[in-house]
Length: 225
Ligand code: IPE
Ligand code: IPE
Ligand code: MG
Image (tube, rainbow, N blue to C red; front, side, top):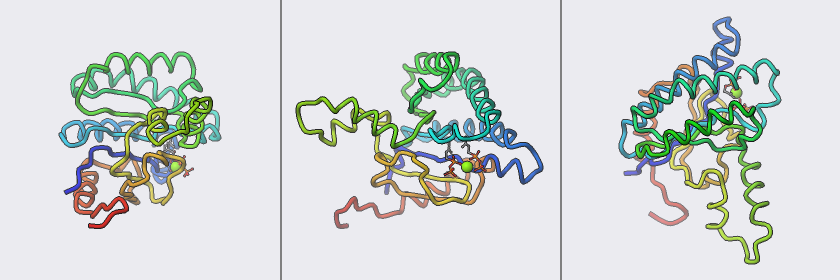
């Protein structure tokens, strides 16, 4: 049986969820934050899940209207501050991947503080992808390696990436079937699951169902059974 040690989720559909109810898109983000909490708490209670990487803000999301971007930044800041005791209570280590230097100094400080204060937690690692794009991540890694005297190896690349862990199970909510620049390198052999459920409607029960299906898939990694 496969183990879902590293689950990655593209949390999509917040805006559509809100619009379907005649609400502003940002309401969907607020509701989505509650689901982040529920899913993280669920994952922290399952021993085999070591890492949960959640796509929260992409390098392309800056193209959105200024007010939506500002709302997301504020939401992230308050979310992290409010969740710190919950992370500690559940022994969850928080880390950010992505180029957080693109954020305000204040938000960068909140991110660093929560990373530092949860650094000793050795249960689940919740990794939030913030100003994250896979292509940007790979380019930043390559630029750091370009002066190396030796040929670049897979191991050297993996060490330089923000996310150094292969994905076992990658899920996208919201009905679209694309990766939108998320963990392209790390998902080389990930099992992909797509659901039409919009992120604010996603539940631990749904995740449990997907994990159940995942455990039965035959993963061959290019070899034979
Ligand atoms: C995902 O939901 C959250 C972020 C990208 C920040 P969306 O905001 O993309 O919601 P839809 O896809 O427009 O419904
Ligand atoms: C992907 O969702 C990014 C996040 C969930 C943070 P998008 O809504 O930005 O992706 P596209 O535009 O549909 O590809
Ligand atoms: Mg979307």
